[in-house]
Image (cartoon, rainbow, N blue to C red; front, side, top):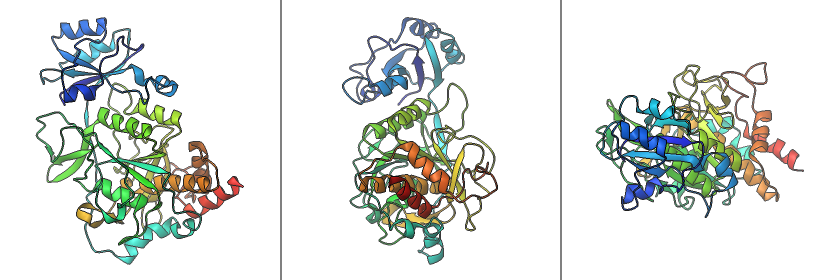
Length: 429
C-alpha cells in the first residue's frame, strides 16, 4: 500500500471507481480521476493518483443503511509514485464545495501490553472470572454457536486448543505502506490468514470464548469467533506494538458487519487528530445494523477520548484492579460505560501457550462476551435481543462505585454477569 488520502464527497462519484482492494492486487482496472474539481487540485499539486472506492456494498447494490452511513461516498486516492502527501494538498481539497471531509491516510499504533507467559496460578487465573460472577451466569447460558463475536485485533493463533472449532474464516486487512522500516513480520498484502504475531488478539479471543482446557473458561465458550487482523507488529524501541492503517481498520469493521457479526470487540483506540473522527462512518453503519461495538477506553490513566470508544453508540470499557477499583492506568471520562477485570488476566497466547496480561484491552472482551452471552440466552428463549436492550441490561445491573448513576471513572459501574442474566430472564418473561 502506498500513501493515500481518504475523501468523502457530498454526492457519489459517477461512474464509481473500482474498490481499493482491486487496485492493490492489480492496476489493470486503475482509474486516475475522481471528480473534476478534485482532479484539478491534484493536477495543480502535480500528484498523480489512483482513484478508488473505500467500501464495497454488502450486496449487489448499496443498502439503505450503507447509504445513510455515507459509505457509498467514501473514496481512497492512492498516490502513484510512493511520494508523501505535499503540504497544503489536504487543506486545498477540503475547500472544494463538493467535498464533505478529507484526511490523510494514517498509520496508528495501539498500546498493546506485553503478555507474560507464566504458569497458571489459581488466584490470578480464577479471580477475574469470579469478579464478574461467571459461574453463576453460566447456569443461564454458556453461549450459542449461532452468535458470533468479531475480534478486530492483531489476529488469532489459529490452532490454539482453547479456540479449536470456534473460529470462523477470518481475514487479514494489514497492508501497511511499503518500505516502512518499523514494521516486522507480515505487514503487506491482504489475505485470508489472520495469524497473530503479537499475541494480543489471541489473548482477547480466549477471554471471550476459551474452552477452559488449561485456563478458566471464556465468557461464551460456545459462541463463535470471527478473527479480523487489523493491526500488524511495529517496533517501538525495544518492544512491539500493534499498528495499522485507520482506513484498513475501517474496512475490517465493515467486513465483520457484513459477515454477520453480532458483537465486535475492538481492544484498541486512537486519538482524534484532524480531518474527521476515526472510524466514524463504520461505527454509524454498525449502529444502523444493530451490531454492538465494544472498545478499550485506553491505558494512559488520564481523562481523554480514544476512538472508537468515544462514540456514544460504542461501549467503552475501563479496567478494574484486583480489589474491584478502577485501575490507575485506566483512561476515564464521560465516554466510559463500564469497568471490568483488567489486571493479570490469564488467557490464551501464541504458540498454543498461555499468558497473563494487563490493560483495558483485556477488560473489553469481558463486556463483549457479556453481550454475546445475553444474546445467546435470548435466542434460547426464542427471542432476539437488540443492541439497545443488551446495553440497558448491563447499565441497570452494573455494581455502582459511587453515589451517582454514572461515574466519570467507572461509567455505570463494574460488570456483574450474574445480575445481568437474572434481569434479562425477568425481562424476557
